[in-house]
Image 1 (cartoon, one colour):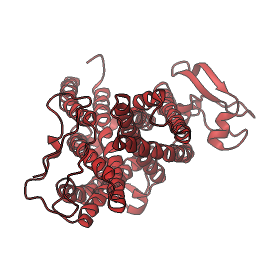
Image 2 (cartoon, helix red, strand yellow):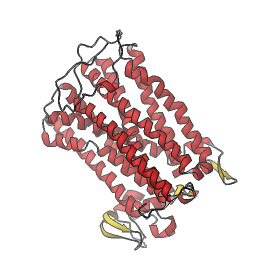
Image 3 (cartoon, one colour):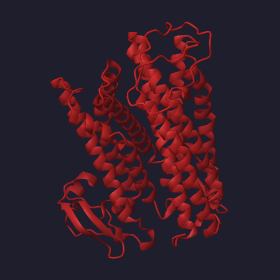
Image 4 (tube, one colour):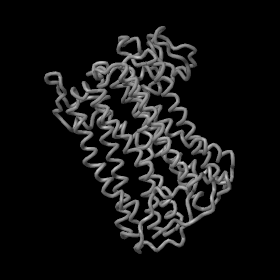
Length: 477
């Protein structure tokens, strides 16, 4: 297919499926914590706005959670089908870590998800809030185990190789490997940023269309506060993560920076833009800022770090790809911070909900968090190449013995099915967003039980796209 090898097709297939999958858990992590905040504020203040927002976003959470589970199942099977030699070599580490994720996080989420979605008027307020907290905790535990497994592949430790197979000898070192804390924090905060942008874009979209009410305003306001808090925190974590990567994966940093070689006694400039050419071993059309590379990556005025020419050609990541994927992530991060600061200024001026250029910007930035996550993930995974377990096992040695034809057919099948299934699911979720939060002031008081069946999360969407339909009540039994 297109002159690609079976190995390249296997990598594309895994990259395609994980790109779809990672979007849904990111929103799930952020929305779960957002729902905890909303229900906590409702129990504290008894303000119907928070209750209505909880009902609104819990329906979207349910759809997103379902798509995340379905897309995640495919990822697990691919380890055995397309990467069988990797599973044989490192399955004694990655297998238990993924099993712990199921035994702790998934069971916790599944156990309390039903109460959270259907138990609003069927259980007491304390139990319902506890269920929401447990679901949110489950999403964070899930990300912990997944990031522990992937981080071990980036910075492996706590193991021995016996008869060509990895044998864990210290599980604490396996789990808490050198890159794990930074990558976990970076991913969780990225999920919160992506969710804040999603929620904020929803509020801004409704305001632009004249659907101006306290629920929509609260939605936008809370999102901008979260963005203002999370964006600077993410910049700080990103700096720590970069220093950690420079220590343990210097070739990745050299590729990200398009840095080929050091000049004796000279500081390293920061290349803002350019085109790293892997054949010519130089970055063409480079636009550089003197010394800034040294300042950012060594925190010194004239520090140096290894260039790509210090590594054998077969050990170099593709600088052309990771150079630009990293800049997409950072560029979007700068725009997020700009949006948050603009929102703060407008809030102080009293025009947060009335300034249409700002609302348009917030709407356009809706998918920016998810795009940044994908760009960061590409940087991380492609920057690890040619290793699947860094410094231990090469990617070419991990792939199963499939033919190019088999990999081509399955890749095409995945593309067709994924765009069909998840395209429909995403469209449905956006229809829920377009409907907007509803006023449910006639809902029974908290703690009273409804005699009928609970409202189904899938019953919220209208039969046709309704940009701003008049509010109507959900059936409450």
